Amino acid sequence: AQTVTQSQPEMSVQEAETVTLSCTYDTSENNYYLFWYKQPPSRQMILVIRQEAYKQQNATENRFSVNFQKAAKSFSLKISDSQLGDTAMYFCAQVGAGSYQLTFGKGTKLSVIP
Amino acid sequence: DTEVTQTPKHLVMGMTNKKSLKCEQHMGHRAMYWYKQKAKKPPELMFVYSYEKLSINESVPSRFSPECPNSSLLNLHLHALQPEDSALYLCASSQGRRSYNEQFFGPGTRLTVL
Image 1: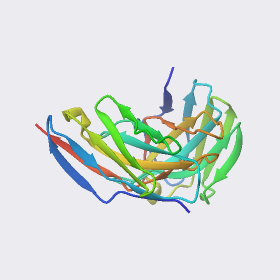
Image 2: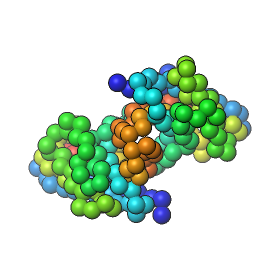
Image 3: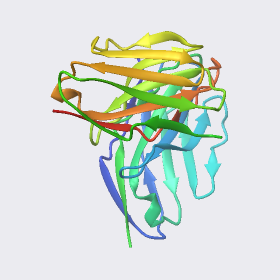
C-alpha cells in the first residue's frame, strides 16, 4: 500500500519570503513518480512540479523546487519569492510506474500574507 | 490544447432526479478519471477509464454510473443521489502510457443534492 503524509495542515508566509512544505511517502514500488499539485480557492487543480524517482537531480520550475531524499522517502516543496497568487491548498501525490492510482496527501493550506 | 473541460460548473438536484456530468479533453490522452472531493480534503478516486474501458471502480455506489463514449469524452450519470453525495466532482486525464501518468484536472462540477 502507498501512503503520502503531509504533516502541516496550514502554513503562512510573508510575501517575497521563502517557505517549505513537507511531504513524506511510503511505497513498495521501485519506480514511481512524485508530484505537487496546487488548488487555489474555487479554482482548478494544477500541477506545480514533478519528480521521477529514478532521477537523483531535484526538479525545479521557476520559483518552485523540490528536495527529494529517496532514502528518507521525503519530497518537500520550496517556494521562493512567495506571491499572493501562491495562496492555495497544496497536495503532495505519488503514483507507481504502471499504475493509474494517484495517492494524495491530506494537503497543506498555504496563505501568503501581504 | 492542454485543457480538460467539465460541464456544468454547478448542479443542484433533488434525490429523485437523474442528471449527468460531462468531461472532455483533446490532448489525445487515453486514460480518464472521475474523482470526488469534499471541502478541505484531497480528491478521492472513483473511476478510471483506460482506452475507453473501465479499468478501476473504487467500490462506488451504483447510483453513480460512468460512461466513456469515446477517447475524448467521459460522462458520469447520477441517479437517486443522497445529500452526502454533495461535493466537487473532478475529471482528469492522462496519457495512459503505463510508465508516466501525470494527470491533468478539469475545474470540476460542484454538486449539491437537496
